[in-house]
Amino acid sequence: MPNAAAEGFKAEGNGFFKSGKYAEAIEKYKLATNADPNVPAYWSNMSASYEKLGDYENAADAGRNCIKADNKFVKGYFRLATALKALNDLAGCIKTLESGLGVDSSNNDLKKLKKEVTELQRGEQVANYCSKASEQMQSGDIAGAYKTLELASRLDAGNPDIDSMMSKVRPKYEAQEKARKSGLGANELLKEKGDDEYKKANFEGAIDFYTKCLDATSDKTCTLAVKAYSNRAACFKQISNFDGTIEDCSMVLEAEPNNVKALVRRAQAFEAVERYKFALQDVKQVLAQPRSEVGEANFNLCNGMQHRLRRVVEQLKNM
Image (cartoon, rainbow, N blue to C red; front, side):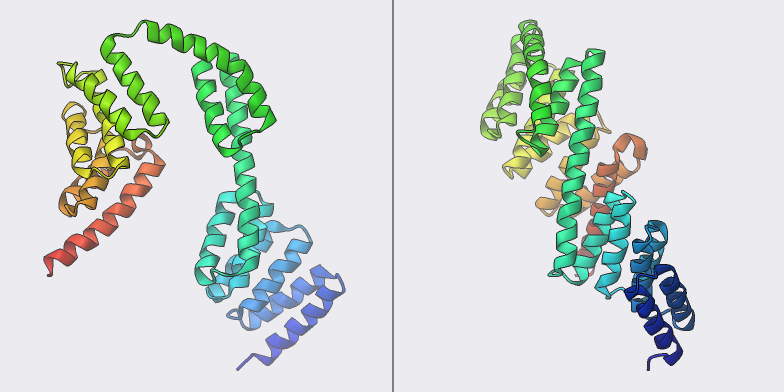
């Protein structure tokens, strides 16, 4: 049964809102939420009023309270996401929109806003890459600038700013690479050729070069061999050769027991072949290392895997 007093305040607030008197509308919506804080529409209307006044912090707070009142009320997610976008919290905005789409995956307002914000994120990332590449060029880090601009190009191919910077960097980078490769030994050149094939997504071709490199390298724990094993493991994973992935990651871990990439790849491969206990052991070893060294993405990935693998292991115990 609706609270009559609260509904009365809401009606008055709506009247003020329609008249453009947003501050007065907010006061009425506050009275409505005081009378009944569990009606999401009161909070939603309050958030919309704060948005009209450009008070996005309070608009966001009202949006959060709207979701708290009823987490199935989709408009609450839209209100909060709109405020977060205005506050330039794009990551928080996307997270909110994804939560809302989890409630109603077909909501056009949420989908439209997510598309807009994703585009803003992309533009922001490209600008950051260009700024970083410019700094790298000025400091003489030509290889770093080239790699940064490659990342930017993947996000926005044909961007004139990126193309202009790349036209200055590429000749210097290619000259450096030619000079660097001229000083490499035969084994190192085989590994380089494998890297080139990997970049082209020719994983079988890359595997062939990495294998030749390893066959010609007697010390299987040297830096070159470890890199070749690591890269070949990545290729095996790409073509779903999980036994090969496990074997090569194990070789890397013999030389570098806490190598995060090898532990993560081997854990994923173990899970793929249903060797869940071994996968869980590798994940735990990653999570036991300092978070700053593991990296946020690897930490979050392994944390999610740990919960999933524990459930599977427990289920198998109970079978």
